[in-house]
Length: 385
Image 1 (cartoon, rainbow, N blue to C red):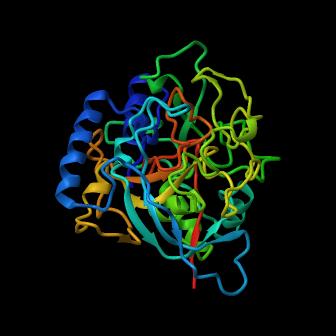
Image 2 (cartoon, one colour; image 1 turned 30 degrees about the vertical axis):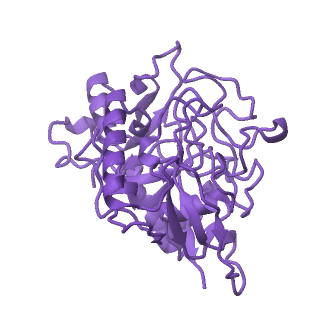
Image 3 (cartoon, rainbow, N blue to C red; image 1 turned 120 degrees about the horizontal axis):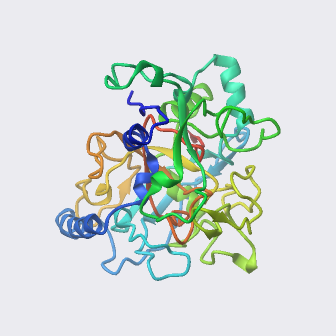
């Protein structure tokens, strides 16, 4: 398993962050966006995926099948059905952000079977119960192996994770090293590093979770991680093409609907929504399927490998409705072609209209599988009848 190079020195810290850093998804240079758009246009014509040339969404059609039996504790039934998956270019709309979201197109038709989904993100209390039962040690709690980092001095091979720290002065948005730092000793129990803990935060989403950690919890709980298609269908709550899990207004009736960033990113969060960092789960209204925090708070792992051309490279015949897609066979990120990455969804409390804006429901994120930060968590699903 690939790990970051842990060290306080600036040069090595940059190397570490490049090797395992999910936020890279937010910083695609303009040249890559233009190339990606051209590739999508060309390959989309070749593969003929069912889509509207204008990017319009066709109606969501929930399946009639109802759940049978008692619901698993803490889970909601997602009926499955057919929907349009993806996102229009959000630039120019209110709160749409500066990114074209080219990897979330073309909009295409997908059908998923019904399933159960965790009502909330997995919490500190739930993860603590898992660790207590299994003695599991997360990736962030393990010292990186010397064979993975042969140039690193032994004293720098220490366990830790990546922590968001607002810079003291306004920082250029193109340099994320200004607000992310590898912190030795940071992990799910110590989200800000040594000296911090989760006392009194049982209901906060667990963070500093690498992909293997999320998979291990899911297996212990008799569940699994959602596919990207399942996650988006659930997040949309039966709505057709809405910008957010709750509808089309960022602040319905003038009220905050998710834990996101307000103010000047990355140095000044005005906390207008009531939270500067993580919020306990279920502090904002659920969507129509009874799911909380499908936008903002923490990023959530999905089981699909990440590729920017996933929606145009699946080989679907013309007019096809893709049934239960599980993503590409392998990962590829043009920015870091040697890094294995999985899809992340939902954005986090750091997303703002200045930077990221992946609180938009159809957008996509990505993370190197062994990376962990204090804004990455997960929720699980379970196959229905």
